Length: 265
Image 1 (cartoon, rainbow, N blue to C red):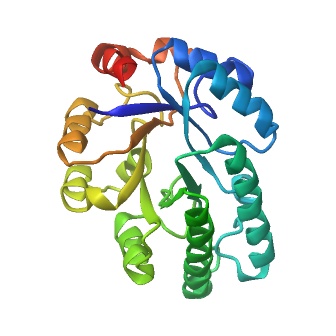
Image 2: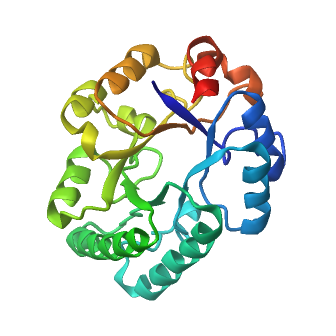
């Protein structure tokens, strides 16, 4: 059965971060994820995890200036030491929070004549991070992001993700498949999961267009979730959407189809 986690960076933002854990648990979620937890002491987050009994599924490696329009850290050779520091910072948090997975954002390349260089740097950095996370019992994932929302994003389709996996052939590197981003890029989700489900470490979702809750866009989530379940995928599905209404009012998709299942997990 599908297991759903609430991304607390986008859901329940009506509340301070540390109050979102309880809200997620009250709504029936068994897992949560946070994009970048580093502004909050790890001990404070751990206290909420312990209090609510939630699992922390995932967070991201620090990405530098990426979310402010920069290129990020993971693919820029001149920022190699900054990337190593970012990996070490994520390990510090992981030692306390014990996430299942850590995600690495490839970042952007704004000069097309440097695409090959950026890709090679990213693969080298990803390989290093996967070694470090393996030593700490954590799976490594990376994701593709659509180039409409983030022009210049280095990895933006499933073909590129699979190529990176094949090039590195690392036992601790998996895909984070983001349904919203791949829908925006015109991907065929059903065909992808039929072929590559075993290579996926984590899934995130939002409807498209709009990046709001299921039912606000064009994706048939009931059929898609059933297909993912049938594919043999064993991981979590992270609700990473921007609610168009207060978060609790955006959970019709969850309450109608899956909340009772989530409580039994």
